[in-house]
Length: 280
Ligand code: SAM
Image (cartoon, rainbow, N blue to C red; front, side, top):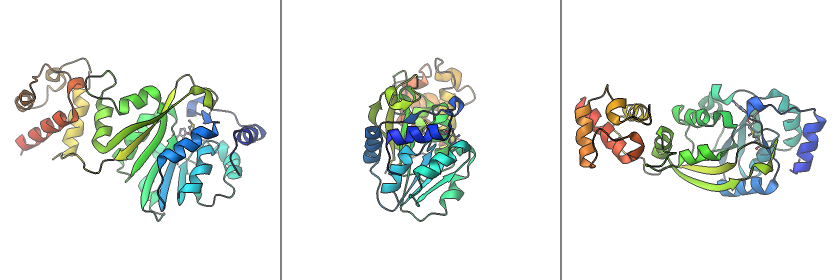
């Protein structure tokens, strides 16, 4: 089916579809926004695109035109009639009706032949962070993620040290990806209209990863450093070798009274590497 917001709305109505707030269902009904997302995703040929939450298939329909394959995960089975109609001629799209968070994505993508892997989605807001963390923790080899997210959450992704949005999520994501805001999206382009504004962000895998000797220790250190955001490192990292941490901090002109929100990713890496070395 050729996309048009009018047709999608009619289709949803004709199928007696009820929007489910608990699944974060806010569907895009502005074709310009969808076209911009597709354009800015810059999808190369020979690619597999994973879409989390195709909804009524507005984005899916256009992804199918630029990607070799599109693999969708949709939690809401009642969308199957709508999706079957919208995607009737898109034979390169597969929809798996299950919770993305419980899916074995690595096993699922093995069935495809592709050179580049993307995630492109208008994410359900209630699980934005768990979805992104799953992509990292399951080590899904994604080259680029382009996602529409709640503005506040997107701001956290790319936040710099010393700003209120900076936290462990910012450090984790910036460790793996170059992050860029692609556009603002008004709440008026969705049905039903959400309470918050959105942005589209791109997370592109870093060509040169940071050099961390023990990634597990690094991630735990970052998590623990931010566990109580208003507390100092001395308080949050009581169980660590504080002498070693102090020495590293001194080289950056800080001491243990500093808060995690001040420290750049390079400083966290220096601390983690020093702790790892000391433990050997
Ligand atoms: N892509 C569509 C669009 O842009 O119009 C719909 C986006 S809507 C914000 C989020 C979609 O994610 C809904 O279709 C919802 O049912 C689906 N969803 C919510 N939780 C999910 C989960 N855990 N796994 C897979 N899909 C989920």
